[in-house]
Image: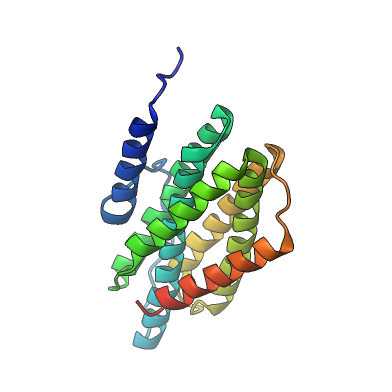
Length: 214
C-alpha cells in the first residue's frame, strides 16, 4: 500500500508537531528497554551527582539537536528513501532522548532551558543540508555521528566511576550513533569539506559548553 503524498504545508505541520513533542512532551521512541534499568543504583556524592547531571544534560541537549537535524533534513530531502531513513533514525534516537531525560530526573536535575533554541537552530541547519543534496545531507549525518561518538567517549571518561547507570546509557548511545553513521555512508553519503567539519565542531562546542551549565 502506497503512503499518501503530503503537501508542503502538511510536511511543515508534521515537522512542527514533532518539534513540540521533542522539546516539550514525550516523543515517539522504539520502546527499547532503558540500558540503565538493569544496573544497580549506587550512592553518589553531591559533587559526583552534579557532575553527572551536567554531563547528561549536555547529552540530552545533543539529542534535542540531533532530532532537529533529522527532521530538518527529512523535510527537504530529495529522495523518499532518504526521508524514510531520516525519520527512522530520528525515532531510534528518541530512545536516547528519553533515557537521558529519565536519568537526569533520577539524579534530581533538570534539562537545558535552552532546548527550544537548540532545536530551532539545528532544524534550520538540517533543512539547509537536506536542500543542498541527498549525498551531502547523508554525509552531514555521518560526520555528525562521528563527532557525537568522540564527544561520548569524552563523557565516558569524565563520568564519576560509580555512576554506572549513566555509563550504560552512553555506551548504548555510542553503539547506535555508529550504526546510524554506517547507514548514512552506505546510502551514499560523501565526506564533507574540512571547513564545514570545523564549523560543525565549533557550533557543537558552543552548545555543549552552554548546556553544561544551563
